[in-house]
Length: 318
Image (cartoon, rainbow, N blue to C red; front, side, top):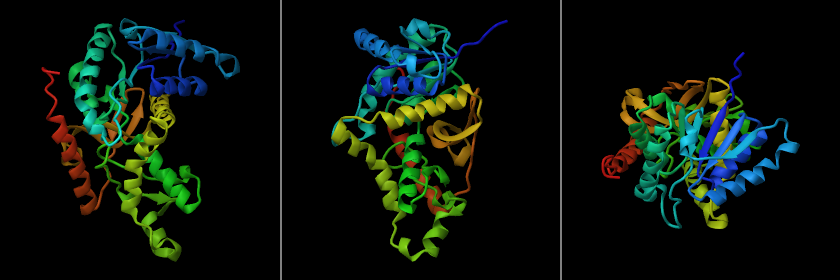
């Protein structure tokens, strides 16, 4: 009898990478987690610390350090390595350096015989995911950016806070760029099954709520965290763990991630955040929601921003 063991490799042992490893381990998502980092001492230290968690977990997960050559039998490779934005920068400002870093990673990973799923966390994630798709030669369903998955969790948290309900009772997401131009199709946001637009109409206490301000808050909260603690890690780490769980457990769960559009929403050859069905094969299908004219216009404006910066990547030069 052959027993299949699930293996996730995380490239980048900084706060995001190590927090992602911690989330995977504490949730018991896979059988093995491997950390890879150019700073081998850092990776070794994180692995040693993580190994000491096992006694108090619900299962024994193997935690190791490794190299690109060890990715051949991995189900999933997560790339967190990149250039974090500095104060007063946007995620788009980190593009060229992040692209150079990612290029040094993808080739040796593919040379190892890797044929699983890439999950991209490095920003600007939509463009980096497109870049990895081109560099790797993998099918589109196997290259996934975290997209607006975390932004959507933040959106639901803020709405839940506003209406004093569990954010898991809120259904909705942001779409487009994981950045300042993202938008929310408010016509599809519900709280306990009731449209948020109807809630605002039916309750005078909420009549002054500005939905555009909520989206703006979603886009900026990551930078507010950056200013006070230097980086964001727990939210994105748990988001990545949720994406991986959906894939390894073949859940067919709908999560807004960054994927390649091929005619959906009238757009092609671009990665952006849209709701998709995730299962063992990766992106099974893109969900096309029917947006209002205004919402679709905002979505396409966000796509235009992604395209503008995508065009700055010369795959043969970087």
